[in-house]
Length: 593
Image (cartoon, rainbow, N blue to C red):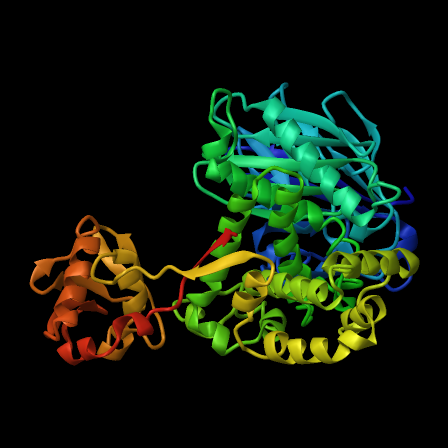
């Protein structure tokens, strides 16, 4: 045996366990021994997840293993090949880990394949075997290059490095498959979990248009994709949403209702537009993140956090182009695009955290803040996705304005792509500044420097009102009266709620809102407002009545429970003396002139 080899068996479908055998050639372990390690996180999802916690048993055949830390083992020197056998529990329905039951199997190699440290650049093999429990109808879907497989896809796959190996997730089971050609490159969408046969023609038409638009965006002349084949691997569930990018594929989680089915009116199917937006987002990542990437990710260090201040660029700008490409590919019209833009803008404005944290800091702290949200997150954190997309919009409009529409943000992104093709190296923190200077020119430097200080390293709100008006996009404030609209009342109070066992629970209480001023806190359960019982069905009505009470400068009493202890809080009628609308976050609507 000359290669590092993983043999993976879906061993226990009802117990949700994969059996893995790792064979290490003697030439690797013959001198000083070697360490093996399971990644602590998966690229594209910036949170330490400690995948090794799911290893239930592990041992080496005719050899001892010494555990070094929570995810690392030492293999002593040996003159013979070493075989490590271990069992991994897999019941995570997300796109990030591994899953196995009698209906489907899925895994990212980061969850199953121990890395042989210091030998990551070696060639690797992965052998996927069927078990007696797997159904004969099960097939394998992956973009990992096959060496020798059967008609179902079980067999031997190969990778030129560990980094390549872990960038090819594998799905098992029965699939609906949609195929198309975009700019000469085969593309497929493979779907598990749909309640019925999806509208394959509609999906193929829409996805082809989106993929064509992305390829032509990055390569307007050659119109060549950077991969030989691409797959969208979709798991449709009752409730779920998310995606994770890979170099030649993406794994998507969506609701079954998000997918198109025959006889549906696609024009009124907003959830389907969201799904297409997710596909567009993850596909854009094939260039931006999987190839162009922060220097801190080149290479990834998978046993610890990798810090970068550039996620506003890599995730935020991708979030800008995902919807823009839906519009450019004519999947949505201008009004629908503006509605999606409006939703993002208002989402940013609703969170006080945008005034406390910059998107640069948000990128750096993603590991401990954005990916570990709690009840105070809206007060302390800004999303580098949503504000990052607005930064891209504002910068795009500024460049177009400055150059009299001769240049745009498109030119800067294409330059980044061209530079990566030349160097194939990660981006340093200041490389984007250099790209702006090179493409737009020195005359834009003062504008860019101030823009970066105010909106990327700073916490100012973006000047979108003026920028959009200058391109004939009408911006209107759409605040509804708090005495007539429950959603506006919630914004003024600064509360977000959920229903738990029939009780209305305050999940978030925002800084500066009337609820916080009065003394309400996240985690409180509401029992009554003005002696009227609070239920999920009556909440909106009671909030409007509360606003009427305050607008008449009358006190109001809210009762509830905090940590199992009853409380009564008085909202003073003096609050009604203030301009209640001025306390509510501004909300905007967009339309074309």
